[in-house]
Image (cartoon, rainbow, N blue to C red; front, top):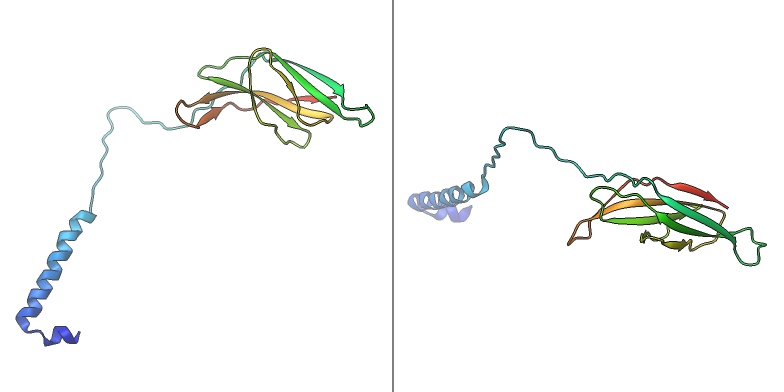
Length: 151
């Protein structure tokens, strides 16, 4: 403040003018107006949900694990056929053990034979339709419809 007091009246006016000019030059850059005009009609945004495949035919087979005294079984699933869903470009088999822990999904191929990774007495499986977006890691999936298998 002492510096400004020592300046003469003309210098103070010149300094005030320079500061005001700096503020006015920067202010328009901070203001912007964005407009969007829609033509007739409405805009709608949502997520795409695939339908669950229907008509799945899976044959489960339970075999005793080990010497047969453990009470645990090995589950083998044979996918005979599975339904198709519009827009789906991939189908996976998801198997969960009795604790609800899912094994890695397996991409389906006709005649797939799958053996559950851990022995047990109860599992669920589902066949899910997917749309894998080309060129990305994004995948849209159908809702699971789990089927219970008890040995």
